[in-house]
Length: 298
Image (tube, rainbow, N blue to C red; front, side):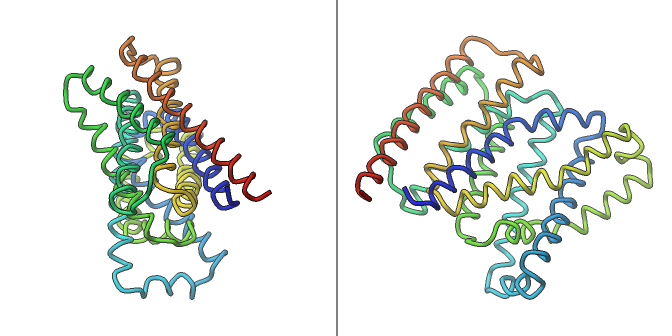
């Protein structure tokens, strides 16, 4: 198992853990409206990544990648996809649908893995295949149990899986990539923020002072998690990345049940257990692959 692959696994786990505990942060911003949070998030992520890109790479390096044919459209599309995903997620969390978002992020890694097989010709080991089948079974149990099309969950899954597939083709430093994705939306978001604050509809007129301070952290927090995801996407197969991402909704599910006290029944618990059994198979496969690599090197 080479060093880049190990780094990719680390970044994937770090990203998933951070995403899994973020509902605590978003709910701490109440009663600031979700729409206000979203506009601040768009602008602040772009600002953080612009500053980071200038420090790390300089102006010439930033403009160089934008000259590649078709690059600007690709970055713009990626930006729209991740912004849509953020918007739905923040609204759902603050509307007390944390468990519903978990369903979406249980479905999403399946779509990421399938996209990896279809578009990037990635292969499945028997352990990963077993994990994927069990994860799919857990998702099916949840979908059948709800007896309705979970629009929040499906939209979250589709937007992020498509974003992951687009990101796979970037092969750029994560900070630069994130800046390109948000640069077209930064100014419109800032204009909306100014209008909302001037008219008393923004964060300053609603939340406590400490909450405004917390809101200012949404840029660095988001940039960090997406940077981890970008690094992981460039270092590990999408199939592997997709399966590791089950850590995130599992953590969020625990928060939804025990911290936010959302309804959770036996059927949902069974689905949760099935998914985690799949993760055990995945871990076994990774351990065996690492052991074989070490034996071959010796």
